[in-house]
Length: 151
View 1 (cartoon, rainbow, N blue to C red):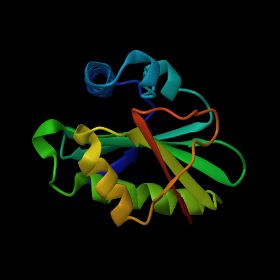
View 2: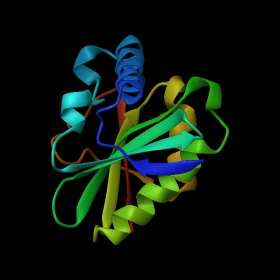
View 3: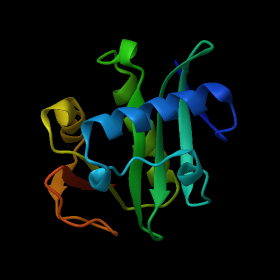
View 4: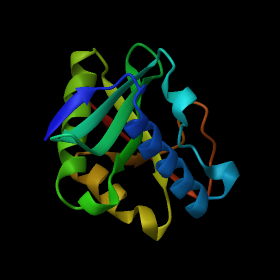
């Protein structure tokens, strides 16, 4: 597997992200859905990576610059057929390394509070993220949990 910067112009990543947003909308009430669509991910403060296995897209993730020292993990997704294959760990390790390289000293995220998101929360815990209060523009939400770690 290799992790590549993605300019979000290809049809494969477009469909992959559309599936992500549809899945999040089916699980989480619209007012609690924080997954970014393609236009939201194309903003200059976002750095986006795709995980490729040969020619097959198997995962993606991004960071969003919040300020000069703080970034947010966004759009972490693994292809359903590749869940629990190590793809998310590989990508999260890459994101943490790149965030440090970019000069960030804190990395935070929002994820779901329901059972569906338990594997994601366990992954973030494994990588040293601790639960925290809402950050940036987030507000308390029964469908969300917030996590952060110092880099």
